Length: 374
Image 1 (cartoon, helix red, strand yellow):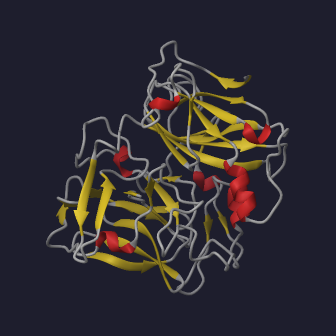
Image 2 (cartoon, helix red, strand yellow):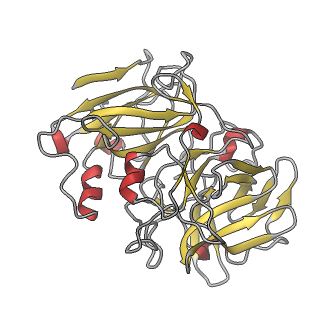
Image 3 (cartoon, helix red, strand yellow):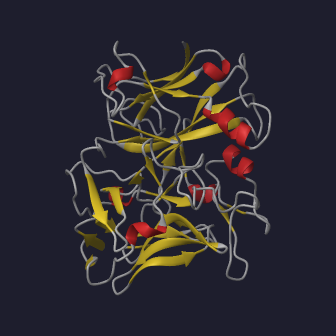
């Protein structure tokens, strides 16, 4: 195992949700192929297979990003938690350190959780330059266990969905199924069909932390050029929010062949770009059918809506497709589905007066995700 970045606490509790059987000796827990991993603060390290980058290369019809003998590295893209040293790496943050193990495409990135809850995006790199990032992953460091704390609801069509009881990336140590009011309860924002998250913290930019110091998304957002960017471009630039406003339709993506299936769509098979952890996926538009202003009750403090079957949803605002800025916190909730309609995608939308379980919105927006069990 080669040392890359490591700032460990002296105590590690050997636990990683759902993978105990793969970790008989208390070493790094080998993970399934996914784009998001849940790990508990202070838990044992996890081993993420870098072969995920080759799954994308195969889907794109290109040569493998990481060969059998390719030398690769590990990089922290951002963390929302200061490790106490004005960076995102350290035992007092959510990511204590990163390491690499194994040869080439059979190798792994080793992630050491820090002592605090938080969100981070890490990447596998090859070489240098603008395309050195070959794939990236969301590390959700939280004591939350979705196997134990979830909500199950049946829609008017008889379809049953099991929801996480919180937004993807939400943080709170107050217990299960709470109606939270802290900024940490908002979770993260996603552009439709992209795997990588963006911070959602109020109506101003949240400070994020790299291995070198603090940063903000505002410094990385960019106009997508009028015609959209490729999926490959976003793989290389997981921190860049690609915004655009042309008439009433916007999409960050220029690809048309798989434009409607980036998150599975119909049939609802979990896609390569789905941002949810293993065993979970972005819901279909049917997940919220039957939700109305009457049965999905609005709460002022904290702002959001609650339904017995689907839980509490914060009014977590959005990141605008027209400028990439955050807005709407405490007033509106926007939740992506995997279902498309024409050039748009369906969402659950609500404010203090209305609930629309099948609203259509621009795919370049940044909205919340509430995962359902596969």
